[in-house]
Structures are given as structure tokens and as C-alpha cells.
Picture 1 (cartoon, one colour):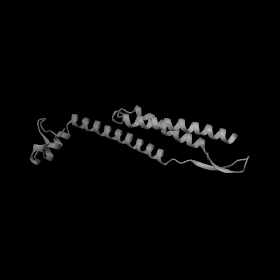
Picture 2: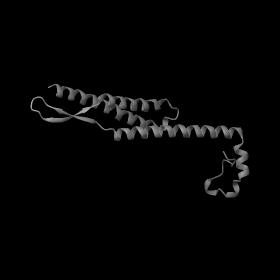
Picture 3: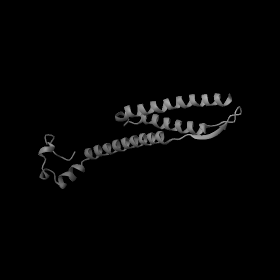
Length: 142
């Protein structure tokens, strides 16, 4: 990309092999500019995917339940129960949608294993929370 012969090895590269003039001449070449634009687009796409996965992981690690105190009519004992299920499910659904949308990116390949693992965790969490919500409803009803 910078005009060195393909046989040039990094171990034998000298400062005199690369001059600013030779680099500028090569960088002004249309093919080189096109290659650089493709490289920059790929880097930006991969950064976006990495940041999205990091933000989703951070949400997963920091999301908290909102509790309220339930007073049993039978014996008056007070126990915490989870409230705000709707917001919790909405946030989880948003995270699942965002991670799923990453598959549409042409730069998804290197992140496929990590993203699919994270997507599985989010899906498993959804199933567990739905089961927990059903159990809590039945318990409160009794």
C-alpha cells in the first residue's frame, strides 16, 4: 500500500526505504485511496459491533430488579417481590434486538461466536425471567 516491493520484510526494512515523498505518491494513487476507504469502513464497522456488545454486556451485568414489599394476607408476613416486569422485559427485548441486528453487518464474521453466545445468554435470561414472573404471580395469588 505504501509502494514497497512485496518481497520487503519488516525485519529488513530501513528508514531510507520509505520516504514521505514515496508514501505521498503512493497514497495519491486511486487504488490505494479506495483500499484505505475500505479499510477505514471495516474498522468503523468492527468498532461499532464491539461497542454494541460491550454496552449490552454492561447492561446485563448492571440491570437490577425493582422490589416492593408484599404483605401476606394469611399471616401478615412481608416479603420482597419483583415489580416493574414490563420495563425489565422491554429493556431485555431491546438488548436482544440490538444484538440480533448485528448479524446484518458485513463485519459480523469475527464477532459471530461472541455475539451468538451473548444472544443465547439474553434468550436464556428471558426464559428464566418469564418463569420467575409466572411463579411469583402464582405465589402471590395463593
